[in-house]
Length: 246
Image (cartoon, rainbow, N blue to C red):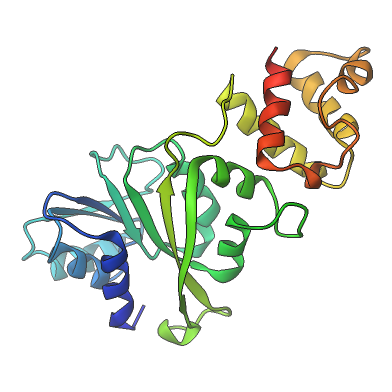
């Protein structure tokens, strides 16, 4: 990111306070990290590239409230943080959102590619609607904010980006008897998004519950069994998961 105004926007949307501990994922050369450190209490700057880690430690060594952490954010034992402000590597976008589902935080502000951001809010039945849409809906309120032209980066990516604001949904939008089952079910069914639920759910039932001969009969007893997977709203997947957990 070579446009400083984006750092200002990210900090503004995060409403930084002196007691905030901010997680900056993919800190790179530390431009955003330094900007955040001027306002918040502490910044955890995570970077997996050891060459960039050396640069970060050299460039940010004067900032006592910045901790440069080398490694994969998904594998590191991080101290507690209450906000995430980051321009992460785009190839970890899906994994990053999923990783945040079970984290306790006030909000997260990212710069994501537009195509990816649109998947987070895709309408039911649309081409972009998928497991990530459903699971994100359950966990977060999502706002798409300012556009970020590709010219703001060097080297330039192929597509434009956008600032995305995530805030945990409290309470959850619907009740689940078994959240882990819900997550597995949603991901499994979207591998067969165009099939009817009665057909798409049978392999999942065989794998999860060792149901074989009775699979067809049981599948026909579930809600929405005659609708296609892509036509189910997030709440419908929740109802289906609750029926399956009985």
